[in-house]
Image (cartoon, rainbow, N blue to C red; front, side, top):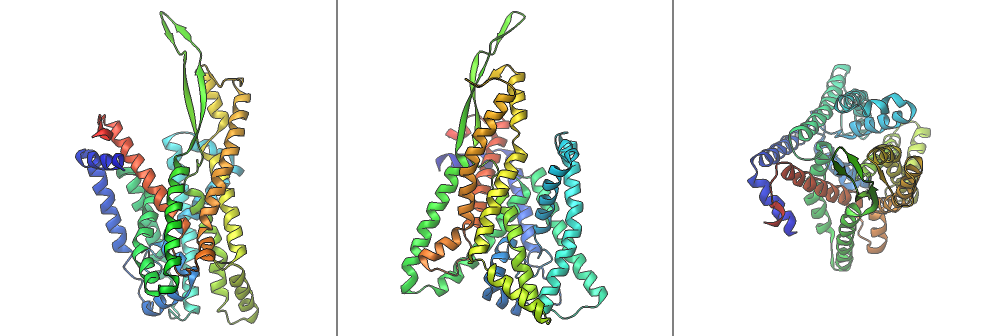
Length: 429
């Protein structure tokens, strides 16, 4: 805690870092202002009542930062952008040229980001049309003519692209990852609402259970911090090399392999996919066609956020995305080549291909522990409800994981900015 306070104090003292923090805060303010500008033609009172009665929609609203319940111009949130990122990441496995482009440096990453933004637009259009159809079937919005519908879709799509642009501004000129920070800000902004809803329904019978829930939440937060910071240290020795009259190398170092290489990305990807069946169910359940109605009702029963199938698929998706994203960001073969290039070796392991196989073996084992932990955090709300019988606390392990992880990553980003500016002794004063 003292180190965090020291980092905060010195970040305020540093003009450049202070400027980045103020810029990030300004973007947060702009995003929250737009989050409360509603799209015209929607009955907000009925919409709030619907969200308070539907657990799935309430969960969706938490991750949208309240933009969905207000049906603001940013009602779609960053969902289309996240789905576009998933599609592009999957395409890297099918088309190696995309992966090669990502390795070309800043120019390659800019091209991939541009493709992601392009894919986001049609996805946002489809989701906007689906959202309109869902609200129309619920009687919350009247039938619109073609021009009004186009205006609605364009407005909601523009809101998503505005949010993406704000996130990229934070990444370029602020502190930390802009997309993650906007998701973090949205979740935090809904905390007072979630806690107030819980407090109004707490009585003497379940007050003890609520206390147990809070204790479990504190334990989960501590576990997230420990897992995020946990690393497996691989010792690497560098042979001595003589160049001219000087001797280089002859030292040892450590290659840190994080237990959770993927961070919060698997959770964000998984929650974007696991909510789709419930969204389809809500749409079909109010259809006039009896067959579609029965299908929607059945899907809704099977994919309720407290159901076994929903949580099982959620758990599997988180574990799968953890392995997938770890494979994307960490290449054992490339690391082994870099170690061999500079005359390094792992004790007992031959350089080159054997080193790559060894790193892959270690990474697979430690990633399993990290993936299972992330999977448990994802289904933590359901597990907690079984033990505490607190049914209406919407924010669960997923939201906690995103909040804690983003805070940790942002602190590291601030620390890196201070180190880069040679701010000596900032952590000890």
